[in-house]
Length: 492
Image 1 (cartoon, one colour):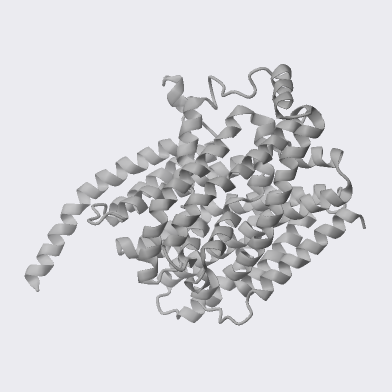
Image 2 (cartoon, rainbow, N blue to C red):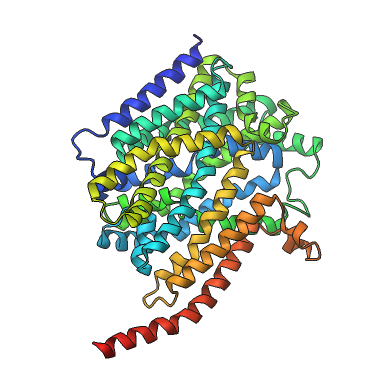
């Protein structure tokens, strides 16, 4: 067994130990299992939310897109910083309402705000469908990381199964407490590894950052800029906006905001999280450094650029540490995704269909659903072939459709009705689904449009359709709601 494989095995065992040990002294009812009893402080919430945000996408997707796309990959740096600004105002309001009403899932929020359990069912299904490509992203990344870091001793298929079994065990036992403790280990590891790689590799192979970019520009003129068509300026702006608005719409991220002790936690995090985004810059430096040193990687193989360059450069023990950090970037968000999907289905779908189910039965079902969700994700992992960033953007296009209904629900006098919220989300999701299934683009559908419009991210187009339908249907159904209320008062 080589040194790299030993290090990988040790960190896998350590993450399992931390995940299982986190249960000690806690009665794992649904609230404790899914939102940690709402007792996490600033540091834990920071690490937990970073655990969800900085995933295998951070490790492989960022470097893979820098390697394969060049200039357009810079959108990755922009959307996080914008999302943190939004979180300063958005998350305290969400937390306050959730805390007052003892909510444990994202769908609970919509059910409570719009007084419609069936809207909650729909929101749950949208969230679960969106999380599948996100979970697939983690598993694909896990397979790449372990296979490359073990020098091929462990196949991607075996790596995926090992990771899925590990994360399923500690999620079922410890819930979000296990994820939080593994996130602590992961964040320290990825911070050190990514900073080291992002600085050392450009210096080692090119003599510095400026020579690296000069060499790339000389070999591939214009590669580091935004193209005039396709991933142009309008694509860049619309993609940043889409991903910033959808940043906290992921069910697992949304529900993690319920774990905080108070609203100040989010305001403190919003100040420091943009600095954490700088990690992405160093990941991208690795991808840029690989362009001329590991040429010829096409399509999904671009996600291998970080490890291909690292294997050329370092001894096995260093590769083991890099692989261990990457392993944790898959396990932590993977655990949160599994838990969120299981909780949504048990509490906001099953409970509606079977209202006589007790809280204890719902909590038990949520835990039993974890391996089921894991197996579904494994199936799509072995079936799909998209790049990591493509998978993430597809999921973002879906979850961002929840943003308008959420935002309007926070108004002091909400004017959006449950019918309007449902119709808006449904139309937005339908647009995304049609484009994803057909594999088409706005440019193909409407070739007569100006280039800037054709290049818009389809998720933003779906969001505009969503808002228009939401407002129209709400305007048509609100008078009906008001008249019914007046009639009930007269009857009383």
